[in-house]
Image (cartoon, rainbow, N blue to C red):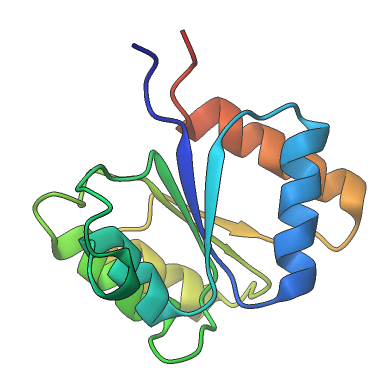
Length: 141
């Protein structure tokens, strides 16, 4: 059985969601991508609560997390994932437009596995997504 190649993309910007989907396709990345449009939706998905009740307890192989999210911030999502016994081993890659040193330090302190600043041109975005897939996703069998 092939390892799970499920990505939870926590992103409220529709343009960035579409860019990510296009970049995944451009890189030939075969993964089941679930999009959470705010921090609470991400937590509901991860905990199998709310509209995600009954989806099972299988964790995604990777969480791509924007920081500036409605309802629950990306920082809070990161903190709760890394404190949860079942989820703490899930790689969380902060994928944000913020290049602020304070944001990086806080994410490191909260347990982020990586911190990447979103590039503004599509070619660089595709390259970053390819690196993410190579580094963080299990290989298909």
